Length: 140
Image (cartoon, rainbow, N blue to C red; front, side, top):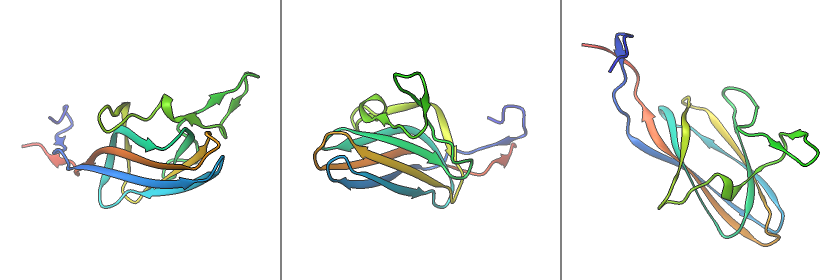
């Protein structure tokens, strides 16, 4: 439906972007996911890990502002502090739905920073699940 705009967007193809990390105890790593050929609508968050971790995400196309902010005990917002994995990521059997699906433009770089919190080796796979967004077409 066009919603009165005179244009409609046909549904795009289902797509997933994944990134792997292999961390030693308490190590921090950073990685980037590049959005390929079409804009991408992120709808579900999935992660698998061998232990616990914190994470931060940044959308480089819009700003370097992180997707989250953490308030520590001193009531100070810390943008360098990550969110605990169990408070966000779902599983393949029970993915976490993104409350407001987020659109990444084509060729965008999504920066993800992970930090092991288990004090042991940790293998992490993070997957963004959603669909490619087709360009809008004139309504018939």
